[in-house]
Image (cartoon, rainbow, N blue to C red; front, side, top):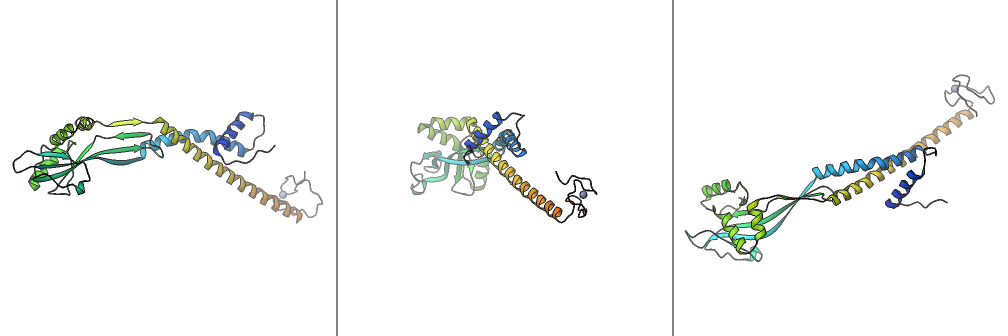
Length: 269
Ligand SMILES: [Zn+2]
């Protein structure tokens, strides 16, 4: 009984695995079937290597804004202070007598791998301060480079934000954001590995490679079939015209030649 043709990849895979299991070496298999079976087996390790390669070489960075803060002083000579904004920063009026900078608390997320991220890296939180005196400058207050950035800001604009990190940490602590404060002071990078995502990537790539190779095998099978059909028709044409199909020697004198008298190849039988 002929089985129905299916395009369901799981069914195709199951039938093929079943065929590999069922067919012994003594049984005749065409080279096209063998090629398909081998492509199923060989595409597996290739897919695994490829998914590990993508894990190592493809990454996407996204970033999430966790909180908006403002830095300023109540008046000349008073200490630097920070407030956490509860609403849209564009609609919230400044409360400081002397406003100095906006600060964004941001979490960057780096996802490695494609299409499913097998590895996710969370670098330390960023505290991006933008001074009102020079909005083209952004200083990450939590980064080690902040000291130099604040120093050059002070020398170019006269704005002194030296204690900004402590002031922001105090404001977050007062707001009971312990996790953020710990992250900012410890500056640690967290990495999570998701083997299930790597497995999903491997399986998807495996199917893609396998289906591609099946298409290529089918295409070359079709080309082969066309070419042999053309060769056969050409040979018949030559025989009808009384020539050897291999060397084109004129055999019109012999009625049913067994062999070509020129090249010695078998013609009938
Ligand atoms: Zn011949």
